[in-house]
Every structure is written in C-alpha cells, then in structure tokens.
Image (cartoon, rainbow, N blue to C red; front, side):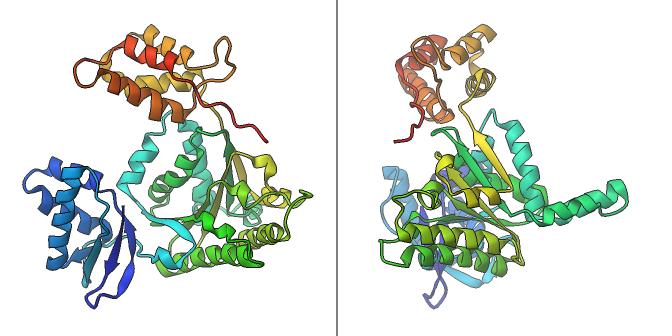
Length: 392
C-alpha cells in the first residue's frame, strides 16, 4: 500500500510503498504489543519518527487491516522532520508529480526476499549483478584492474562508450519483470551503495495530444536524474512492456506521435550516459523484435528469459516442497510432467508454477489433510501452462 507523508505543518513530503502484511508478520515475530512493534517497524521503513496523533491513526488502520485482511482507507502519516530514525532512510519522492508508478529504495528486505524467491536463475543473477555493478559503479572496474594488473587497462576504455541500458526480453511468465523490479536489492549490496528503482508509468503514452508522449517520456528521464542528483546515488529506471513505447519507426502504420516518442526515448538513453550520478535504464518486453533497431543497438546487454528447463523446474519443486521428503524420482516426475509433453510442445512458466500450481496444491490439502505427491501431480496434470506469446 502507498502511504502519504506530511510534515509538522501538514505539507506534503512524499509517498512510500509499504507492505503492512509483512510489517505485521515481523511484529508478531518480535512478540509483545503487535501494534506498537508495527509502528516501530514502520518508522524504520519510512526513515522518520511518527507523531503521536498519527500513531493513533496507524493503530486504527492496523486493527481494521487485521480484522478485514485489507483496508481501503487512505493513510496519511505526519512525520517529525527533525527526528530521523535511520541513517539510510528511504528516498522520499512525491510520485504524484513524477512520471513513475513506483519508487523503491534499496537495500529493501521485502524486495530482497522477492528476488531470492526467483529460483533457478542463479547464473543469470550473477551475470546481471556483475554487469549492473560495473554500469552503476564504474570505479569497481578500475579498482579491479589496478589490483590485478597494476594499471588501468586500455581495454577499460571500451566501457566508457557503453550505454547504461539493458533489455530483458522473453515470453510471458518467465520472470523478467519480477527480476527487473527486484534485482536492485542485490546490486545495492554488491556495490555497497543505496540504489533507487523508479518504475515508469504507462501513462507516459499520453492521450494522443500532439507532443504529449515525447514530453512525458522526457520528463521521466528528467525525474530519474532529479532523484539521482538529490540522493547522490544510482537510479534504475524501469520501463515494463517497453515495446508499447519503443516500437520500431520502420512500421508503415506508425503514428507521428509514436515516432516522436521513440526519438525521446533515444535521446533520454543518450543523455543518461553523461549523468553525474549513474542511471541504469532497463526495458522489459515480450516483443523484442518490435523494438526500434536504434534503441536495441544502444543496449549494453540483452538478456533473454526463457521458460524453465527440466533442471530449473526440478529446482522449483525441490525448493518449495523440501519439507515433504518426497523421493528424488517423484521430484523428477513433477519436473518432467510440467515440461513439454505429448500433445503440448511447451512447458509451464515460472509464473505458472509459483503462482498457480504450488498454491493450488496447498489449497487442495488445506485445512484437513497433508500435501502429498499425488496432490501436486494432479495439479500439474489439471492446470494448463500459459501458451507462448505470439505476434498478432
């Protein structure tokens, strides 16, 4: 949930995303007064002390949340500006005045846990961490060169011409968006710096008014630069479903406004290369072939996300059902059945397995019986994997 922060004079300070379910779970683990503990955890999350009157409002909200499992009420919290609770507080950004749907500061425990739940992608995680670390903290490469070679290698000059730009492409449900939204947690730890994720709003397409799309796209890059300048820290600028904004200008039916939008994206990517504080642009797309060639040429790396292979599907089942003590051959049978089989050339996506198969197996057993191999196998056989994305 997104909460609004105001200062002692009720002036708007920004907005912060909060997971109250996670906050209350953590509070329960601490023991004692769950509401008082939740407020303390919330203060640590937003980086400021909360006024006594707002603590009462938070208590009321939490009681409603606990009773109903949710709360549709808007939560406005008054903070004490002169009482910071943590040195590494979240970056406060008034997202209503930016081009972003979400702004998240790393390190972030919730996002780190989400990133760790992306199983079977260990090799890709290591590769992206290394590439992003070099793009967001180029001094690491220089330090490595001097440590191992005694000088700054001439080969490092090639990195100066690279654009801080990545493309994550792949079929639906392969984990690329979740990866893009959470890998900043790993990067912040690797480079020992605070990193901010700014997810661009699809409202950047505008309403078709001449010049509106290009202005909104330009504003998104300006807002990202403003965040990096104010925080003196790297920013990851994320655009999901990038093909909707970055489609090829070679399309005959392409509207003039769409062409102008693509030009603005290219200019934005060009300009972030010279930003005083690093900005890494990340595009996610199901249709990389539709992205303008000039944009694709600027990508430092393009990573393709695929459906999990046999080994990766096996890892998913082993990691999520490790307490059941299933036999190795049972795990292997689940992995094989969730792949391509007779009459179906494609297997389950990561999303299919983690958001459908595994939860349905749990719900089948809950609340009166144990989860068994037969229950999991039946779920794999009953549920159908998401068909591959096809153009047109």
